Length: 391
Image 1 (cartoon, rainbow, N blue to C red):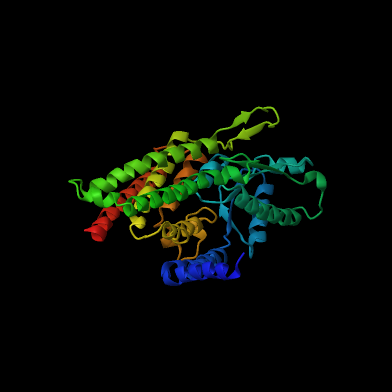
Image 2: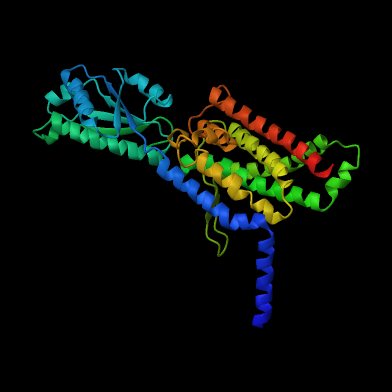
């Protein structure tokens, strides 16, 4: 091995980057911007107040005393007590509407059970949408409840201590993190891979001269972009079908000779229609096709297409509601999050797969309409960009 030839190759790579300002920006600026954005989101996001809905269905005085003890113990903590009335039947609707994060239901026989020396059962209810986040919120409520019971029952009679029963509305209590994040990554991965596929493929069409030859024919620029969008959309549909099937299905492959048995698919349950979840993911992927065509007109090499990932894809992953709820982002970032298509895909997929929402749900209809509108917007922008570049 010749050190001189190795250094010559090294110098060529350095000169290549030195004359490519966009690549230098990718190396120097993009990591700093993405890291700064991550730090801003993590440190600037609100820790969040746990809104506790207390429903007192007790017919005796002990329930009111417990509620008063909870309200007193909550002062100065991260738990905010929300008035819940006395109707346990309204708990699910209140949690589903986002009026509270956790509900504590005091049963109607709470006082009677205490007087009889028995341990009554309190019910702790969460929405069952975010197992990790709701687990932390429930833990804060359990700690608060413990302090309240010590105030209410200072003698510490163990036989009278209430039991705590945990329940959820949507996902089961024992649901894992994958059940909650699978709908999110179904959309995110489809968006990511379809963008790469479209951007690089369309760039090759431009560099190969195919696009210029098409422009010399009677075919209009809008027709060219629409045709490319439909063509790439076929492969985007294939990717979404594969991702949706892998997330939802469960295939047990038996052992074949030396190959042990294994499972294909994540077997993630969907409370709503899998077809509607597919349509939402497909609408996002079609938007990624339009975005890839639009942004590829600003690239000269395949490497420059990849440079758009930390600028376009990564920020959407940080701000689109995948890891942090939109309402807990820093104030300056919330309006930006509302402009990102991934935000609406995440919201719609969660509504369908976790809450069981359908097309009659206004949130799902709005999210689907926005995703379709974004796709059409980038089709129009791509058509105008091609005209400016080649004409």
